[in-house]
Image 1 (spheres, protein in one colour):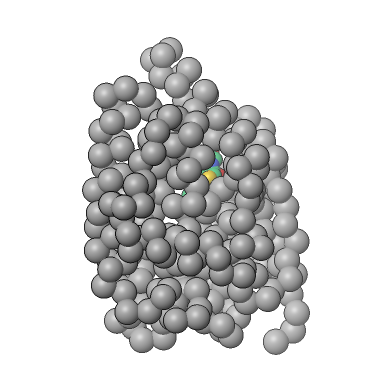
Image 2 (cartoon, rainbow, N blue to C red):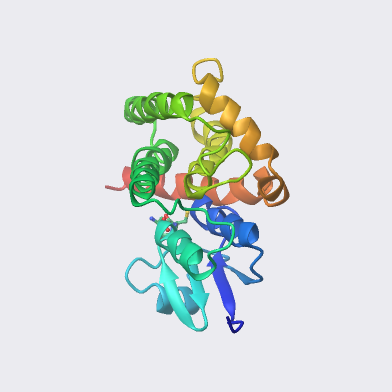
Length: 230
Ligand SMILES: N[C@@H](CCC(=O)N[C@@H](CS)C(=O)NCC(=O)O)C(=O)O
């Protein structure tokens, strides 16, 4: 296939953007990373033009054409560069990982944002919702036959999506002040986290706390301030 230009608008603070970086790295695709510097107050015109509906990162730009929404981008990447497959080829297996990826984003990644931007009783409710999702995912982790959802050695689509859990530590620290994820309560999930963090592509492309914290601190400050003015 003729080589086409690949660009990614993203930020190291975003689990949705970093999962796309991981997928491109797993496939060995060269790309230009365009850091979105001020998502809160000053979105770039490239982002707004490329994702006019949601104006959110990540956006993959392939040969000038924008592709939005991280799960959609992961599927696109797997179709365009079919080596080192991240999605199963079997339609049933594929539907199962898509199901769990949607569950993860709706019940884990989005709820994590709600924990970040709430306080008191309201926050406790969000934490409880998050724990409910963790319990369900713990059962899935227990049932999994291989080390990763992609296979014994390979990371797959669902592994990359579940990687959002790595952002929890910063969120616990910034907004909750205590641990939500107790490794003893979720032993299978915890084993997966350790192995996932230890796999080469993830280890080499993991944002530091300093890359994540300022953005999340800002979101918390901004959302809490706007709630007190409601
Ligand atoms: N469902 C989206 C979520 C992306 C998302 O929430 N991106 C955040 C950064 S973590 C963003 O761009 N926020 C800016 C905004 O919502 O205005 C995806 O999977 O791509």
